[in-house]
Structures are given as structure tokens and as C-alpha cells.
Length: 165
Image 1 (cartoon, one colour):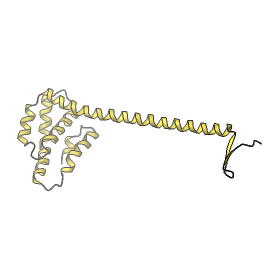
Image 2 (spheres, helix red, strand yellow):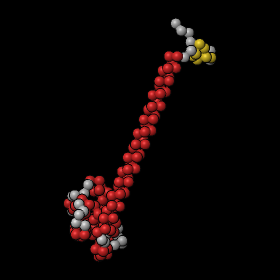
Image 3 (cartoon, helix red, strand yellow):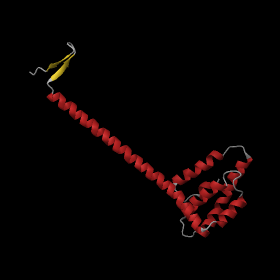
């Protein structure tokens, strides 16, 4: 399957995302799904070509990302769009609409990354706070051992003054 060859400019994480759309559809033994997979692969080059024509300033990486996203959303799902319907829809999209779709796709990725960064910062802050509390408690225990004047005597069950030597 030339999917790998046709998406050579895409980032690895975007390829993995694409695989999450494609891989579950293999081996379904449904003729419609097999036809959708074939339509996806067959539609890659023409879709990329249309995008390049309409959006000449878009990088090849983004052409492939946008093209595979559009194909996956419309062609890969049996019964959603035929090849002809997809081609007509793609042809009707303006460069602004394509760029908006691409920006939305990237924005969700950026938002997820920002959320992950926030989560990591919060987790680090909690870990540092726990370490600080642990350190403070250890210092208090050490100070208490050095300064205490009473100790529990397990034989008598009472607190008794410490006998200093």
C-alpha cells in the first residue's frame, strides 16, 4: 500500500494518527470497507494535487496532513461519501476553507499539547510540594529528637522525663 510513500513529508505523530484511522478498518471482511480503503489510497494523489493547486503556499507536510484528514473523514467511512461526491466537495472548497480546516486540525493538537504541559507542570508542583512537606517533617522529627524532654516508656505506659547522662 503506498500510504507510507504518499505521506513521506508528514511528521511521525501525524502518521500514527492516520494509522489510528486506517488500521482498525483492515480485515473487516466487509466489501464496503475494503472499497473505502481502496478509495482512500486511490484518492490520496488527486486530493494532494487539488490542495497544492488551491493552496500553493502550504507546505508539503501540511498538504499531506490536510489531504489525509479530509479523506479519512469522508471516504474511509463506508457510506459517507463516494469518490465522486468527495471530489465534488473537495473541488468546491476554497483555499480559505482548506486553511481553516488545517488550522483547526493543528489547533486541537496544540491545545492537547498545552493541556499536557499544564498537567505536567501541575504534577511537578504537587511533587515538589510533597517533597518539601516530607523534608519539613523530617527536620521536625530530627529537631524533636534533639530537644525533647519526655519519652514514652512502654513498660510503664507513661510519658517520663528523659534521663540525660
